[in-house]
Image (tube, rainbow, N blue to C red; front, side, top):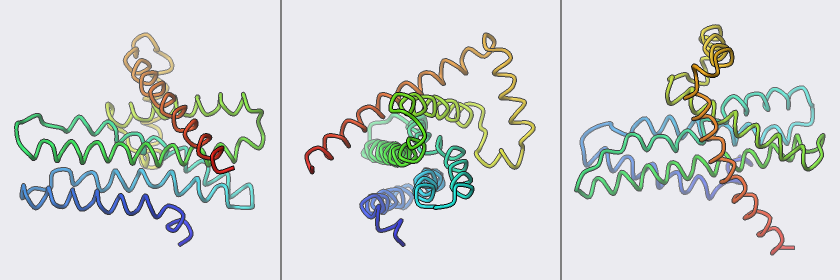
Length: 214
């Protein structure tokens, strides 16, 4: 319950977003965009796991939830790539689709950044300020790689358990043949760099608000 209370504004926004998706289904008599319900649920998980990590006293259990956070972290920013489902047309439905997809992307990124800031507070205990920044950058690059795996190669987070060997083989191939897999690393860098820019803006906003309060 404390997790829900802490992020009550986010839940309120997600309820409105859910209403818009249901309204679209009602108007179009289709289940199109229904996949967003699942993607939004997956985007909440990193925030939940980071919340648990910083509040669990035992390091062993905190390490487990931190690993789960890392596994599901790409799902938050992945919502941004759902823009590929937008079909251009001259109708009110087109603008409704834009609102739904953009809001989903915004909420995914916000939840991802909130979870990263919480995790920074956790692993930042063991690192210097510059090392913490470097780790955060590398985590965002890893997130970019995860987005590529999900969007382009269609791997899912649970494939770590369901198809671990196949997933490891695919990742090993990317590492062994970087020039053959230029698209992999270019998209990873593109997603990761974009997320880092958003992270810097997000971090600046938090710091400015904190400074104003103090």
